[in-house]
Image (cartoon, rainbow, N blue to C red; front, side, top):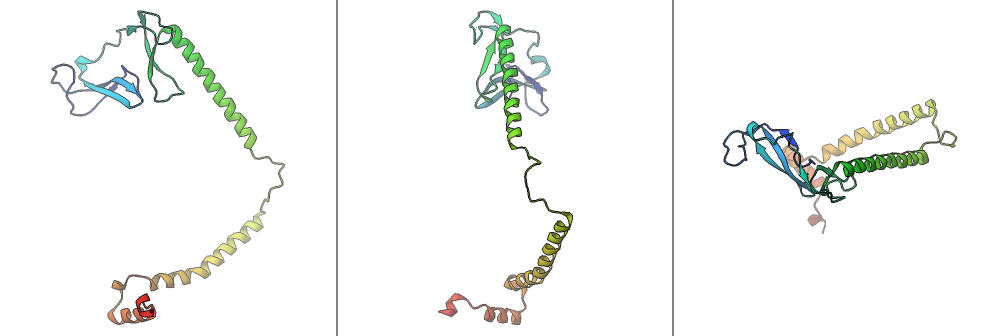
Length: 181
């Protein structure tokens, strides 16, 4: 998500969307940002917004009039609306965000403390010998099962892989349900 007025480099064959300009766009400018996403305008170098130009208007929080505004987004709403704040409200907003982050990290620390492994628990800890025995049993089980699995796979391969006489033997070995009835 971007904020209105944000400028990014753009590499494509898009045409500048400023008035009747026909130059190739080199940048894109965010013109609107809301819960539906961002809207961008493609601009050439000559028609980029002036970064020194101030955004003057009424503050969305304290309603101060004719002040410099900064586009800001509420971190709790993620993709929510953009607010335009004066410097005083922006300062309070940034302090609020810092406190929100600190409380989040405090809650996370408490959660981790509650669910950390406690070394004093009487857990079933396997010795290296027991672990080796487990591995040996798994290998033995696998080595006993592998030939059976290979045979089963070979018996169930598609009929197109069999020679004509072999196909007949397979059909007799696995009769269809219609023949059973």
